[in-house]
Amino acid sequence: MGVWVEIKGCRVLITGSAKRVGKKIAVDLARLGATVILHAFKSRNEAAETASEIEAFALYRPMVVHGDVSLRETWTAMDGEIEKHHGGLDVWVHNAAVFSATPFFSTSEEDWQQFMDVNLKGAFFGAQVLGERMKQTGRGKIIAIGDVAAELAWASYIPYSVSKAGMHGLMRGLARLLAPEVQVNVVAPGPVLLPDGTKDAERHRIMQTIPLQRIGEPADVSKAVRFLLESDYVTGQVIRVDGGRSGLRPGVR
Image (tube, rainbow, N blue to C red):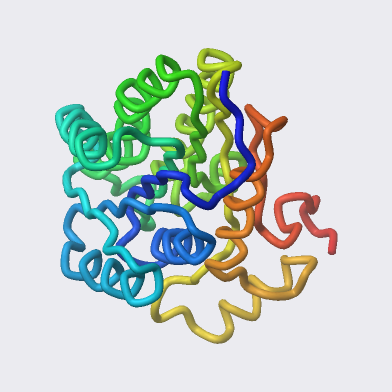
């Protein structure tokens, strides 16, 4: 059984890494010496820009794989490409997801299915393909980017919250299934990168619910991912990166 604590040289796939949090994770790991593999579905131009940004300082151009993560054939194709060009994978950071508000009583079956397909089924198929290969090769790490909404179940985001809760449960099961060769954990951000157009009053209201009194940044999530990459005795855990917000009881600051 192989275990390592060095990020340098690790082959890391980050799904949904064209922009926002996924991009920050990819750039930070590349700066630390990891061989990053980018993934995008619709954001192909942004993925190419991210690859160019990394190439400028990392002395290699990251491989970019594409596809709809809700389809098993996408994972099979990505696994084959990674095996062909890099000889395998050490770490999979699963960040690909869809997120939007969905008023409960007007949520359509199509809305519901999209959340389940991308956020839950995508993680399931990825684990079937990549998790099995890691188990067979004798080592690996899976880090899923979840959400504190999985436990808090925000009223305006119920389908999204349910999909993330399912994904958290999937990862806990995988931590048992794939041990001891593979470590599986979840990083669950809270308020990070508020939606464009968020009004100052709403931003202020949210900040009042956060003990650390600031909105999170992509770097906060990236640092938690790094911690799990360098830790060899942590599995089956959900690490909340929310400034302490989810630990508050209603009405208590």
